[in-house]
Image (cartoon, rainbow, N blue to C red; front, side, top):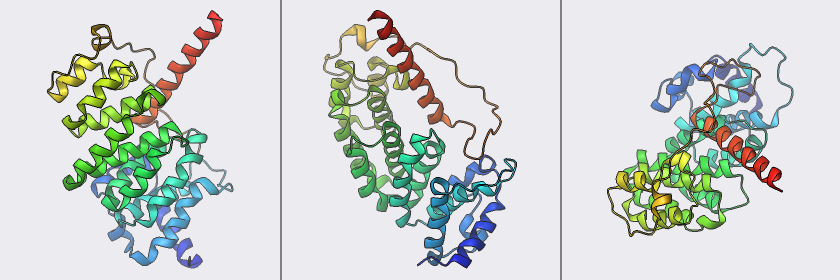
Length: 285
């Protein structure tokens, strides 16, 4: 049961951490929310309630210079550092609404939250990733979270690599960008065992090379020769920087917007690429 008095107290304390862009090292333990706020597992229900406000609350202050709106972000970071497994389902529930309104904070924040929570998060993350009805970039976020768990917990590396490789198997039914991010995570995990499905995905031209590079680059990074399934025209296809990246210094236009994180920029580039392709198809018709 949520203690409303303690919830309000925590929200007030979380507000003092201010602009979350200035405390990005939280993933490395700085700030240490647990020590700073003297948090215990008893605070989990209250922190979950504050976290949910990010997608549920509509009565935000008009003053966009105020930092009170960012209390939910500091709340989910606190839950992560508490290693609160109960937070996983709540963060997953938030992915859909955040994706719908193009709020890309989850792409940068949630994978590291999952990593802090650790192996206890994997069952729910694997189930979410398998569901094709979930938004594409929400699933990419989850795959990245699984990768971060494996990086932080080496004993989970094989499990995560196998899960990501299995998710790549239906590559012909999945967006090429999702396939590319799956390949990217497998590369970071040095998952040589996944080379067969990766090569087949490239052979089917089902991987967005602007995200992960072409097959020749991927197999070189994996240190394998491959089976020769990928035609040279695909294996060595050039990467075209179709759109410029957004400027590094972007002001804060509203309480739910931010400087786009790395995956957020990838998302915007991929969507602009799709729009241009669709316009071309429309002109041809």
